[in-house]
Length: 355
Image (cartoon, rainbow, N blue to C red; front, side, top):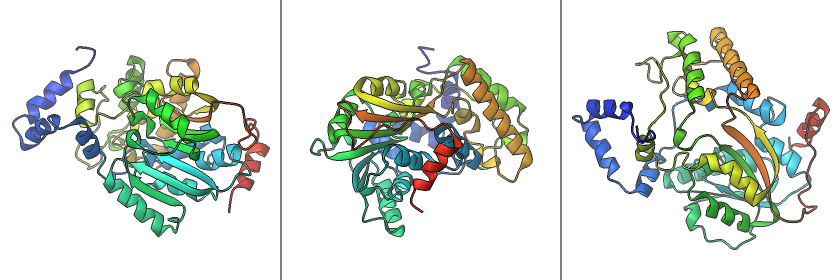
């Protein structure tokens, strides 16, 4: 319907909710300014453990696909491979949220200052408290500001981080142009992002595969967070519902990779899937406990299904890490490192990390 601007699920929700208090609140939210809706969508500082990233085995899978080692995360891998022998770096993290990713980067011992920015003052407050509690507040600095309003001298940063934040930014081209200017000559942009369809407009093949896998799960593993409902089907959200709930969500996500290739020298791209797992496990991830053999068997099946479909070209990876260098003549300060492909290479990286 109108290129999925609205769909039948919107009409059903409207019929159920229009005469309730919640329905009236939703109508009120639709009248709010775009920026106000974005800030409200991200004012929370905690979320239930029901997303795919809450599953330890899923995080291990990411690590394996990115670094070749289930125990070596992106921060450690990128630091050892692309920031080798560098110290006292100055960095900026875009859309830092509550700062948990920035804590990981600060622990590496590479940065003298890492500044995180976000539009949510609630999240920035939580990030500041976390930095103090970890005794990293001498390195980590957080402030509430929109990246579009950031007023900083060009060439201020050695490294800029975009960790699951860039897909919330729009207009993307001028923002990435600004990011390039903020980097020092040959500085690095380190990206870990959702790069799938804009506004979560999943492909038909994705939806078929996700729902086929969902149907084979026993009901106990499909119980949604809160324990009151069994997940029956994944439905593509309408564009209107996405805009009303959070206008920033995956607003230009499909343009991220093309623009990075256009505006930067892309050093490395590592895909880590999520094309099926992201949707499939949404809302039910809390059921997949490490000490549940049946749940683990299904997880392994889902991993294999996603891998096989990506390898066959039926689906593409919706998540990727990307290492970019500001376009220009390579500088010895940030040497390009050859791809790690052997167990010996990986062990060299691990041994170089701070203990």
